[in-house]
Image (tube, rainbow, N blue to C red; front, side, top):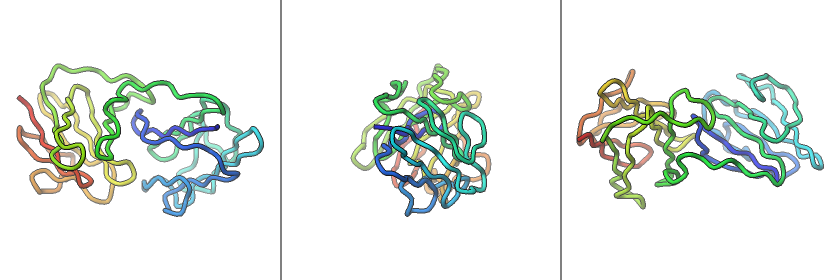
Length: 217
């Protein structure tokens, strides 16, 4: 079956199959595929399943729909085509094909979160390791006790379309910044503003209902 692999900053956040004749994509909740991002129009694009072929059509979106870097109005998709919608990249896999394994598959799907390596490394690029003992530990929910080592240039946490934040390595500091969502993450109860906040050992981060503690020893 034809499949869409949706990625944010190079890591898969969702997969969807194209089983209907028409599948809509947009920011509004009534779409078949909802991407709650301001760069995505309410009704952004439409996938047409015509026999063995799949077409994508831009629905006069504000920021456009791109396939392999080129703006399109209507395009017949081929296996491995990459669609760009706002900040998201959507890889099209033709019927019977499977996605390539991801570098950090074991770090996905905890408490509804994903951890996203890399800053501007591109789709499916490997992160650059750093020598550090910094980490975050989940304090509540089903994933309580889960710990993620901050060994990459950027670790992005959150639920795409709801609330996303990033922890960036800047010199000897780790800086938490707001990436996406109407609400900003908090540190020790205070919202993160501006260009971000340098984290200190023991700081408690709250993001999309999940509380985490930063450790740097």
